[in-house]
Image (tube, rainbow, N blue to C red):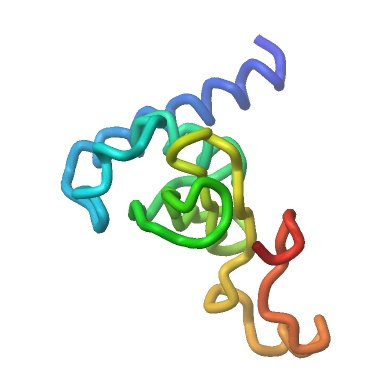
Length: 122
């Protein structure tokens, strides 16, 4: 088994384990009937996008994309990332480092910018 296969198995096991809590109620669950992307599929996308384990989730109406998004907090090796998945299209709307997980001295080193974002801050 090569390194890439091992990493794939580890990521897959993490996604499978994190999916077990997906059936529990979550903030915004009453909006699920409007979503075209299932919570399970959105969780898989979020975990793959941030390369970590989901520790919180919600479904909310928010500007950007279709206006309905799943928001996940994903624990990674470098901190907690916030990942937004469009609940109607499955597009990744956000993948940013949560400022609460960045030490104050690192925020200062970044010129006071508390978040990094792959999409320019959306």
